[in-house]
Length: 582
Image (cartoon, rainbow, N blue to C red; front, side, top):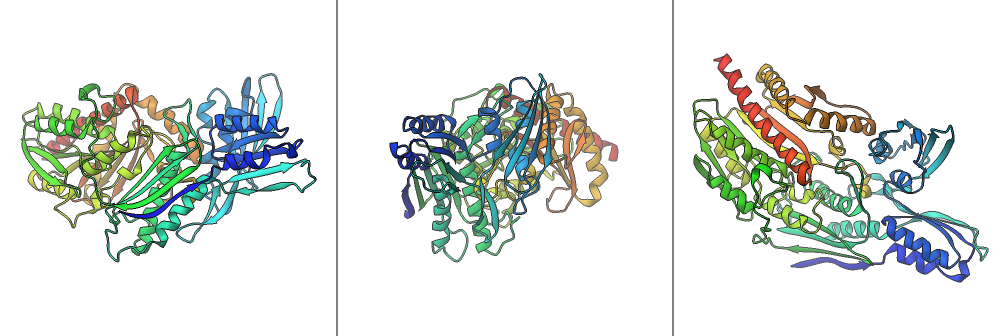
């Protein structure tokens, strides 16, 4: 094991209280913006008040949402107009997105959003049912910083405003680098300073372990939660991927990079932050235990071991690939007279509803002796095991560290290595001859942010806010008519799933308000992207996208039911289409 960084970083709130909660500052007025939850900020205000300092401590993360939750009177609200900043160093919708999900939290209020100037203030006009009109100015503390790609980002930061100082000193109005920001930049500096090997993979596991205070605040809409620790995980994971892509002279969109396994593990701490960055080997023994479940009513992701046993109970010829860490990538093929279909799930292992939905569908399809099905339930078992381990501390986080293989690449882009994960899929296509691949996926069930590199997740902006259950239809150019017919039939079948149309309508509506529009086609109540490309070996590929990172209970059961319904509808529609073609 090699240690790149092992430090404690003082908590900014504690420094603030040490410097200002004393009698010599009695009569001072103080405002500060921190990456701290409300309870810690209110306790800090009380400490300052005891010393005679009038203080208001606010959140530096999503300040407008926090202002509505903590300061703005929402009783009797009739309408709200929000004018959001548009800054030249940020996306035009950056602060519109950062206001998410206000439109859903106050859905009884007529709420509109309008672009404004670049002075980093939201301007809110609140009209009440009794005729009152109240205006608020909500500061969004940000500063520009040069990132790991030598680009300029506009990023949230701590801030301090001090006036009426008892000692007669000048007022203060300046940014404050908080412990969250310091930890992020220390880690990125340590990664950049290390002498990495000349060729990929650079390491087996790059572990970033952080214990830090922060915000973990569920909201009263869907699965939404404001979490600075989750945001730190996402920023570490994707920033380090971007660093290695640049080092390897790969374009930003490349998914074949194999740097090794990058694992940020961000945990709650009440006190100074502690950060440790280490290079270590794989630990393939880590297969977290989970309770045995009936897959028909599962309320959380089952264990990898249970899924392997469930697969062994299905009829058909089995085959096996191998993961980078040595876990089996198991599948089966059962031939029949209908057109062959390949069903896969778990390519991105933090997308939790897909394996269960796939199992439920394949069981039903195999009850028909004519069904011709190849099936791989968990294509990325290393990621699946990692996701289970990370969920032990943070069960609701997205954990994109578990998205790719242990070599750090999207397995779909590992075609040069048939011995590893992609080999199982290639084998399934070869033995079945399937021309339709149903590839089950998911995406974040709540907002996805990267605050320390510009807030919006670079390269994944389309997926930053949930937009309902989504379908992607990829087809070879000559299969365009068949693809359109197939997606029309599948979405028509899905419209009969109880609750799906309303679920989609609501999420699409809120997403459109906070992202500036609908960049997709709606077919039978389902958002769809249909694209012609020849990247996939099968001429037809349906990719499902359910907002399932990471959900439980009724929401999880609904997710895997929709995944199941999609597979069944697609297999039936495809068989009908091919019969008519013949």
